[in-house]
Length: 579
Image (cartoon, rainbow, N blue to C red; front, top):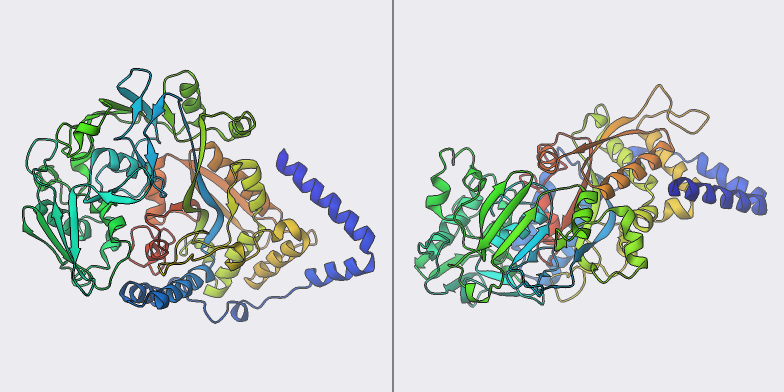
């Protein structure tokens, strides 16, 4: 209803302007409606075919990874984002922030700027030693090498530990490592591990476990989505990663170029160790690499151990007595409710059955803000909520690459991002006009983008000039071969009908419905398909979609993280670039 009222108000305002402006406004409207676009001329010199020529983008990312001049590297990253944004498969909507609710008796829970929550310092002043939490529904993977979701990263941080971690200030700090030394050329790292480290079964954890785990993470049979995060290591391209255990407490690895964010990598789940004997005890470990930890009781090395798992219902984690910092872990147990039903989660929290929840129903946000509820928290994040096209979708069959880009741009400029952030997000999100978010460091001592003027399009065009923007969208679709009737909508002769994929969440569904209504303005028919979280992740990964809800929270504060995910072989390349 709010959406309809907003549109009516815009129409009324437009009518008033037209009446006041007379012939001049009529001339402007006529000019807009007669706009003609030639797809091949419109695409621009920097455009790269996202299917046939994507190796050019892969080469750009490889050059960035190998570049030692930080200023030149920043320039190359801007050029790579130019190429990424030129094909319009990635359509930014807004820059993320994170909302959650926490009972007043909870303290010590903290997160890093990349949305990973940490519970090893948590305590409850109500006398309980058990914290009850909802992060999401059934996790996709608990194997740290295979996880690619934010909630999975939180679970990984609860049950595993790497060489480094994040402290309460959100900066990296040693975990299993005592520290490291770097060679004069910045390429060889020698890491010293803490002494007497153990797995949760009491067995010794040594540098050999890291050598095994890192080589496993890049092995083709593991099929880790994040294996490309090792692409800055020597030997990666040749399939012989340059990492080795010098002795039980010393790990050495070599890079191809100095890396300013190496501690962030050492704190990232893909770099966490896993116990070889535990992994390979699973009977199908070669064909199902994550199967070893799909039930409770698996061996880990973090502050907590998974001791109970009722699939799709709940998980239980208990304190790990062998954790290197067990003396400072105050809780005995974490109990996770597995659900994606915002209303059920909110009801459980209000009933006192949960101590922390990572989501609230969209229709409750306004009241929580207005009442200044102290339990409602909003924190900044580095990330972008976006929607994405499968570059190989049948929607683009028979179209040239330039025509396909015109179709996707038409979709993008029709989306009312301001409505989405004001009426659905409601927590101060900033509308997005680039994939790399505002405020991200540039790797050269500065900020990659400091304001929206550095983006790729006017995110408010549909609000400030709805008639002109709609006319441009129609012209783009005409350039792709579509015909329109006198009513300004697609002709029955050349319809556009496609499905939008999203996971279960009131906010995601409402955004889908808003986009559906925006596209209907020119006659595009968008069906919305809601899937369970695990199914949704797999369908996107496999490319079984036309148009889908996406989001990316940075893994570390450097633009390469948001650029390298789109290389041809990346497990996070949902758009299917180069495939």
